[in-house]
Length: 352
Image 1 (tube, helix red, strand yellow):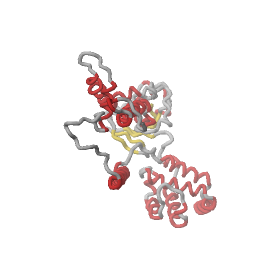
Image 2 (image 1 turned 90 degrees about the vertical axis):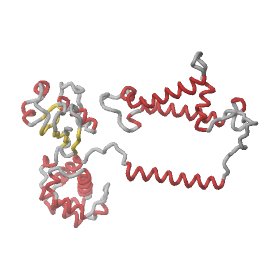
Image 3 (image 1 turned 180 degrees about the vertical axis):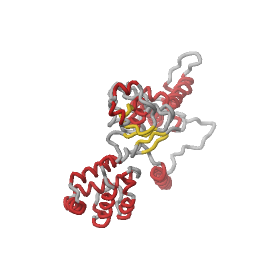
Image 4 (image 1 turned 60 degrees about the vertical axis):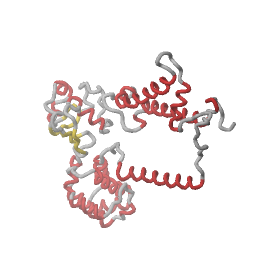
């Protein structure tokens, strides 16, 4: 499969025919690519530098982009459908060497920081150690080339943020390496721009698995302790000579039993039993099966309807509302069956 490489950010396998603009928007770069004409090829707000791949510019690109832009490999990403490996530089995410960061200078600053700075006092997302700084100092040329991962750029951004915003450190580093505050701030911005956007994902192992296992363990222990203290609410042993009134199904089937009692008979084969016990539950199951296919249409409010909805609840409010409404209705039927039905399936109150 062809790949799209976002220089300094990552490399992704995509299906042949994938539109570069749509892919970049899905990856979270839409704040840099306004695409004012919505991909019609009539503006230049989705333009990026394409280092390799992408074929030749089409007529729309030749009309919109200047000769200088075309010579510098600028392309309209909305006009590129991937058929081969493509290398893209997104504006605002250029490789750090564009800011003339010298590897030797970076290496010296990192070694100085590893020896002279109070690393524990630095506010960072991950612990900054002298060992990590020396390792990055040895790979300074690779860092400048933008060929390290996002965690390394995050570390560098945290380090230089500390240097820039701590007056005594800023003064010491400035004197030691003849660096003014403006140059250090440019270095900080260079590293911040290299930090990739956070991915929308949940790490199943070990984090999520630990949470689920912990909940299961404490739930099992809690129920076991509760069962030792409180007797189970068992009724009299079953006997053919006595039928309880009302005769209730187990609680997890009470929703269906309540649905059977409330469903109308529509005549013919559509009896209340068929409607409440087969048709309505069947439609509910079919809707759940069809939801992944209906969801792009249900989320009608989205600007880009060609992309799938995001994984968060806030990305799919219509589908979430329908799903939780149906689940609330089903739970409501169970509660009615358990607490509000008495002899003859009549209405009662729990406190009566």
